[in-house]
Image 1: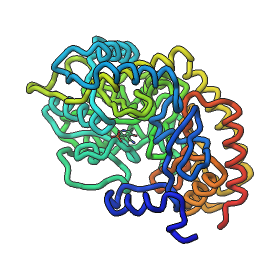
Image 2: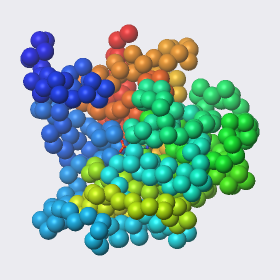
Image 3: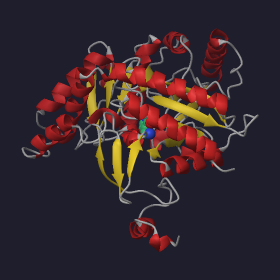
Length: 434
Ligand code: PMP
């Protein structure tokens, strides 16, 4: 087909002329999504797709959820913006809910507009408190696109610059499939990683470390998470050295993992700071930090985010959180996650291209390799993405080496929709040409 005959070709060429080259688009023939309902989206090509990527995990409870649409509509009809110089009722309502669920004593909450800004804030607070720019991060992490957050991002493909305001030491993560300790049993793996953590603190830092930042389940890193006990043992070492733990829950918050409202709690650990964004307002721009008061108050100057806490995002977020809690979507995430994991593990027995299936709740990674080896197969991963789209299913891609399928539908996903997705993935893997 000539490029000009592709639906949306005109929009694509205009896009290419005016948008940055590094802002990637999915698919050989990129899609414009124009409408959505539940877990389905309608594209500019007129086709309907089952959405198992939810706008990079931000469409938390599905499209066109009336309770959220109405909350936004009602607020938009009253006031779009006031700024945090004035009291904002919805901001306080939301902060109270988040503070309670954070389990942090006397927690304080600050709202911003994205995950990067949330992490940036956590880095600002903890470095100010410690009067140190030294930070620990996990290998394979993703914490954002801004100057400071890129420095804590342990994936080369997302590391836009090495120039950094921080000095970062990378410690072992829970990504076992390619870990030098991956062959060890759970306890041995954790001990090896924790020993390394201690060594890295002792040998690569001055001893005054501002924080350790960790995703309890790595998102862009391909949905890898450590065994039980890992974060408890990690936190015990951090406490010995007086290093606060920042849990980056930008992807894993709100019960998506089916295990806890904030996923670090599922590991029996209450972090000192939690960063959040993405799904909180079901897709509207939002982010924030909840922290122990002495960390939140560590900066001595004024600080403000003009649109942070804005009434529209707050209305959407309150409606989204209420919807998740009222419908016990965490339980649904657990049940549907089990269904998907079981189905994908069956496919792994059938298709040797599947090297690893892992995940928690509705954050599931399928790592693709050259059959019979552990060699990552990013090209095959792209073909699977394309083929799944042809068959009507949208999923994501990630992983350190670009060879992980990310299966992560909205938390309202039904059993039938999971079965459909599994059938499509089965057909996709059966037909994906070499
Ligand atoms: N932290 C994590 C764990 C993320 O997954 C992301 C986004 N992928 C970010 C931070 C940055 O969020 P944003 O893109 O909203 O700036």
